[in-house]
Image 1 (cartoon, rainbow, N blue to C red):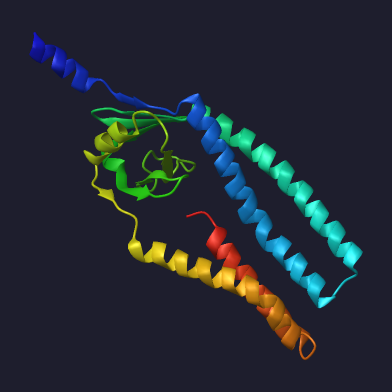
Image 2 (cartoon, rainbow, N blue to C red; image 1 turned 90 degrees about the vertical axis):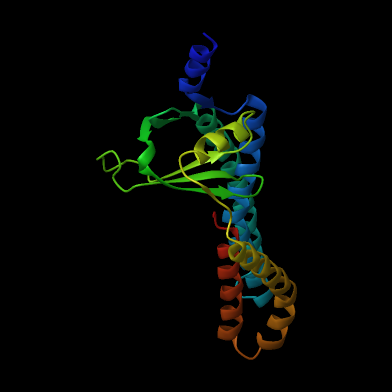
Length: 225
């Protein structure tokens, strides 16, 4: 009898979803991260262009103010969107397939269709499932599914998925590269005004090239993994 009950429990699909508190926290952090990554580079460029005096200060101030308003609106709408997504997000790991429920519907992924499972570090991290291309024969089938951490059974979900594929730890080189890039960008931002003072009067094109280089660095640093 005990053996039958144990077999029934093992056959039951494991269900994972986030609690309301985790949804609110993750939606807030996610909205802030998306807004900063989208707003910081153009805001920086506006501030530097003001130092180069390429446009009247009142125009640049108006542009910066508009950018801040748009950033606040983006943060609010992004938070609402993430909340809706996370409330509907659910993962069920069964003996034959993994069922992923989202706002767009339910996807029943066969276990062999999961090619890689990667661990994503950080507050907004979790697990990333790489699926085989065209695994269900549909053009709009997802090939990457991000499973956010924060639910009570995340460690159990992690163990259940590890039975399908071994988890790949984050690549150390990438993390170190992001840290180096972060330091370079911060130092560049600090020294850019002094560089512009030195070369701005000699060559406006060189000054703009410096601004563009820092902007590209910020975009790379702040883009999602």
